[in-house]
Image (cartoon, rainbow, N blue to C red; front, side, top):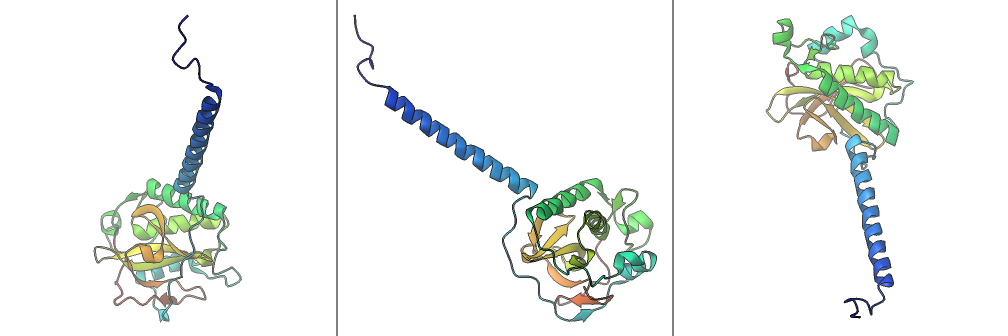
Amino acid sequence: MRQPLFGSLNTRPFLKRTLRRVGFTLALTVIAMGAQAQTQTGSILPRVTPPVTQMGAARPIIGWVRFCEQKPAECAVDTSEPAKINLSAKDWKTLNQVNQQVNAAIEAKTDKDHWGVDDVWGFAEDGYGDCEDYQLVKRKHLVEAGFPRRALRMTVVIDEEGAGHAVMMVRTNRGDFILDNKKNAILPWHKTGYTYIKREGDQGSTWASLGGLTSPTMTANQ
């Protein structure tokens, strides 16, 4: 009888090596997919980066002043709260989830189109809002989730189009990170491409200057 082509060879070691390689490759693939999933859900902590530099005191903008007159508890600073969050993986995941969920839940509409006037700050109760409304809603959800309001600072920037824009700066022991209605990714402040003008202070009603060249008279309706 004629022998099969590989009949005279001992194939068991070859098969074992092949199976080991396949198993190792599959394991690496699973690990990579898991890491990618964690990155997408925001469960991996960001690298440590330097915080933004505060340059002295600044006046709050008029939209904020009006909002605080109506909802003073939202603007009060409790100095017994930490000014920075000791960021955990759970915190980072929550920040990403809230940022994405609120961005999806609110439909963008300018204050002029929405209310007939400029620069109205609020909680987008009817589902429509502009940049500052998105951030106020995010902060409300985060405070309800146990985050210190003092570490969640409303911030005015100049955006990539040269217009005023409101974002929320989350101050942490790993740096200052930006929640933005223009994007779902949470970025370190210096990776956004924005010029930082000022933000809420963490000691009282006075805002803090962040060294921008000019200060917009109102936040952009983005």
